[in-house]
Length: 325
Image 1 (cartoon, rainbow, N blue to C red):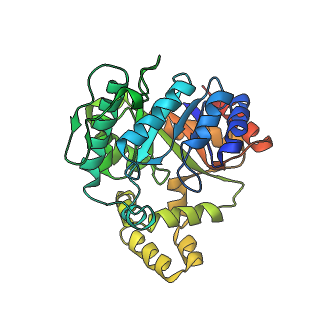
Image 2: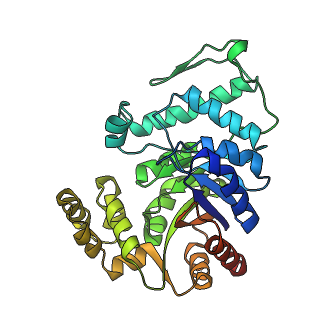
C-alpha cells in the first residue's frame, strides 16, 4: 500500500512542496482542481522530483476539450519522465453548469467517450495513426505538423476516474487504469458495491483514496466534512448500504437552512466510525489503515493533509513506513 499526499497550492510553491514530500518518503503527490488549476503545480513538481508519482486527483473532465487535456497530460508525462497519472472526475451538475459554464449531459457515456478520445489523440501524437476521432460528443480530425507535439519516450499516462456511484465504478472497471475512490466511502460500501461493480478487471486497476483520520478524539472537522459530502444526493448510495435511510435528505435540508452545527451533529458516533479511522497516534492510525484497507486500496492518503510539510508530514510518513507488514 503506497502513501500519497495532496498539495493545494499555486505553481510557485508546487516544486518545493513536492520535493519535500518526496524527501519525507511519500510515494505520490496529487493535485486537486479546487482553488488552483490541477495541472500547473505538477509542471513545477515534475522537474523538482525524481521518484514520486505525480497526478491529478482530480482534474474536471468536461471543462476542457479532450485535445487541451491531452496536450497538458502529454507535456507532464514528458517532463516527469513517465511518472504522471491523469485523474479525471465529472464533478456535479451545478459546478459544471454554474461555475464552469459548460453543458451537463449524459455524464457516464460522455466520460467513456472522453477516455477513448484521449487515448486516440495520444496515439496520434505518438505516430501510431492519423488523428481521426469522431464520436457522439467529440470530434478530433485536424492535426498539422505545426500543432503536433510529437512522440515521447514513455507510455501514455494512465487514466484514473473518480467514482462514488455504482455506475461510475462500472465505467471505470471497463475503461480506466485506476480509480480515485472518493473519500466519502466505507469499507462495507467498497466490499459490497464498489468492487463488485468493477467486474473482471479489478486486478488490473489501481485504487487510490484519501482516508479520514481522527487523531486524539477531536472529530468535529471530520464530522462536518462527512456531513457536507453526505448532503449531496449523488452520494446517497453510501448511506443506503448501511440502512441509514433518510440521512442524506436530512443533511440536505440542514444544508439548505445553513444549519452547519446541526449537520455535524447528525453524524453520530456509529456513522463516524464507519467513515473514519479513530486513532490515538499516527502509528495507531497507520496500523488501522493497513488493517482496514488491505486488499481494498492500493494507495492511501490522509485526507486533509494538503500542502502539509514539516513535522506532521514527516511523522505520518514515518508511521506508515513502520506499519508496512
